[in-house]
Image (cartoon, rainbow, N blue to C red):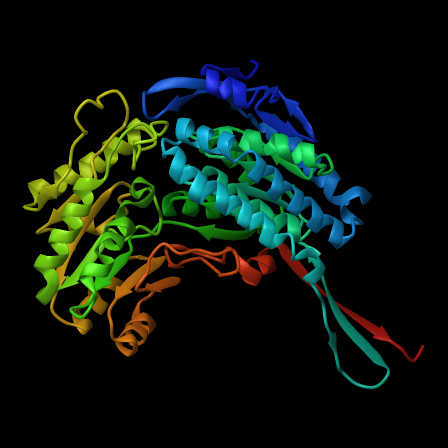
Length: 495
């Protein structure tokens, strides 16, 4: 079945996209089933795309393998590879409005936040990694007379990349940019809820001149298309961002042929406010740490630990900040926050809130749908108090606009409670005592710790998790080691 656009804006933006599978540089119609893409603000379908079959995935992997071995990519000068990445960054920037509109329709986030964070971030990631192809160097190693030993970096091969629905375009950039900089070829599977910006990105990849098969895009469900990609023997590496549960399944499915794996998984992140923190200056940032991107953020600071002397003040500031957030459709310029991505996600967050209430917790603000917004998947920013640490609203990853305020007495207590989770992705610390902040940061088991700030990212700074939050790193020089292999070459110079 051919790709269908059911919304006029989607049709206008993706008018040059002929099908939902990009394979070997051309748009392909799938051989499997199709499924609908729904606008979270209205619950109305806006597109129909392919649920790529095993055969479709096989064609995409074969195309990536041919491209990996073709002179047009394998022998392309590193400088030329960097130029392609830079051209793609410029093309994304030139289509910023279209990308932001698609994200608002597909994911539900506001056009403003999509443009300011997601699109600008994608541009920054491709620009940054455009500088790396010429800097992937080997070394010479002294081992004795009459011997020359040197190392060289080679691409790890064909990479399957599976990205989530919370930052569709940005996560595509996080995955594609370093893989392409290292000389790999890619089969990218966007989330089934949010594939539309990946299709526009695919059109730009063709437009700027990437050789056919270097980037292939297959739409589909995780349990079908994603699993076929993970299990495919022609894939050398899987890079996945998503839930810890899915990460475990991918590990099992990829174990037979020992694929390289990097995972960025779930989080349940402590955000710690010490008594000497400048509450008046940072109060809104505490709320934003939990509510940014509708709370659909693996780094969301949903466990807000507050030292007892400032508990009342922090509670008041966060509650007031939550009340001021205007919830509405992503395309409405007056909206500060859009809906959750799907009915399933909304149901899950509501279930966690119902469990918290039944356990004795108090919902201070929010907890329901905003007035007049009954059609989409909307939820008010929600502040919870009087919950205990083993309540699911505290102990589980929420992935919605919910923050739970948790009082604590001293640093030793909050360190123990902050680390009492299987996750270890991110944490925040707020204090005027920088020495105390450094000591606490050293004790928190998390891949990223923000001090007197939150949700900061940069393409040059490694990002990833401890414990069940994954392994491997995104960004910076660190990520390139996951997309390359080091080869050692010994030469007997006496012959």
